[in-house]
Length: 311
Image 1 (cartoon, helix red, strand yellow):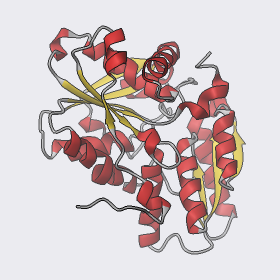
Image 2: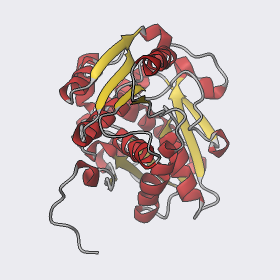
Image 3: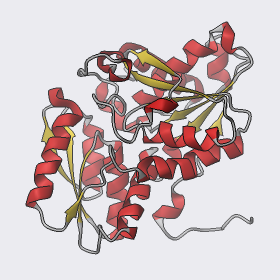
Image 4: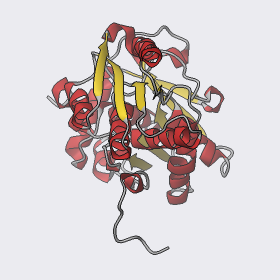
């Protein structure tokens, strides 16, 4: 199909992000021969994989007649889903109100405000549970309001199955191992479902913060790896698809983020560093020799400059 010379809506800019082979970084990490590819989701219009999540859920709510002209979207978010939703909602004429932990970076808050969103901050120690509780209260108070329900809405993983997973299979049918951080679990679930249709022996590896390793059966806790580790197991995560769970520390994720940015010249966020840390453990493991890896690098690093991870 001939590529269009121009697009006229923001929705047309979402998806079809590139796979990247970080050759210099792999060499510096001592795994120069690895078949390792990263999907650069910062190429989406608002800078993260959550553009896909937000678009999929908004379209689904419109199709069901639950989101109509003049409506209000109220959503608990750790940042990127809100940014993606605010971007798309502003272009479609919706009001947006987001509840988020006050531990989220200043850049994320400012990006949300730039799109015209209203913010309600909740205590960081309460994690996403606190933000969800506040959003539920606001939904009862504000007429014609609806939640995207990113932690429960099955349109979340379905859109990733339709787009993210399909793109990975199209571009890298040799994939053996998929590594993904888990926030809502929508990306990991959708990608795994899409690829497992074609490759039954795909290994699916989930990444979570070591301070809030609920997937591993440990208690929820406060952690600094923004974008993953919601503190509970969301309905949008199909836990049965996961073959292995790797825990990553904030220090390791931050160090890996810095090393990748300075090796490859691509400014990425802390959850990308978490995914890269997990991937590197496996790449150094002899049992994975010759395997082809793909991971998601979820967002741009410009929304983390105030956190100190690049100092």
